[in-house]
Length: 331
Image (cartoon, rainbow, N blue to C red):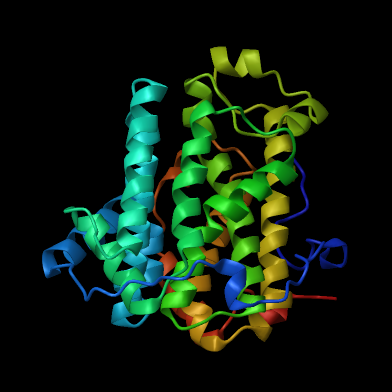
């Protein structure tokens, strides 16, 4: 199966549609935290969040290690909250039970911003992150609402719909990390949005083997129709097919293009203090490149394994201030 490789040499940056620049003001992400109470999280609360992230989101646990201690702990708190929310959707036996759990977290977030966190490790840790860094309520509230919306699992019509979801559901994990690093900047904001888009694309591609076994598919319907993917056949017998690999190739290329655009357009103009939060692009990029090596066969078992090279790649990217090798970019 012959394909154009996934690297920035051939991703056609000239055709990249940059995220539109937005004037950045504090009110854009209001309401900001107005917590008056002091820190309430114990060391065991922070350790609970750390272990939860290390166990359930290992790639981003490694990403967090490149931030200063307090910002790192804030990132653990937000990521731990995200894991709790994801588990609600995964474990729910019926939509009503899941909606009740999400309703609890909606209330818990409001209480956190009133300085009255629930007596739970994650809630207390999020409270302290919000209190210490003035993290905008918009991001935390959106984290809950976007996970809740996925309960109906209606799928996506086009790649643009996946990207829109990624902007909301995944970028809102990066924005609080940026704020914990003291960065509120237009270019960093746009970088987070594009990384969120790429994260959604890679995440849905990576989950395809499991989702097909559960008789669902998060690849956009337009993409499936374009490449004549027979979903009924794949539901009955999940396996790699030429049509599916072609669809995955186009899907993955869009995500990789977003990451190249971030490295070319946004990170060079973003405050360097915020770069540790943007390192979350590195595991996404690494996985997409591994997907290319597997000929876009999402069933290749190596794609579900951790790579020992990730920490090295993160260290290199953090040192250089980019995850794209400049020697490999041709204009």
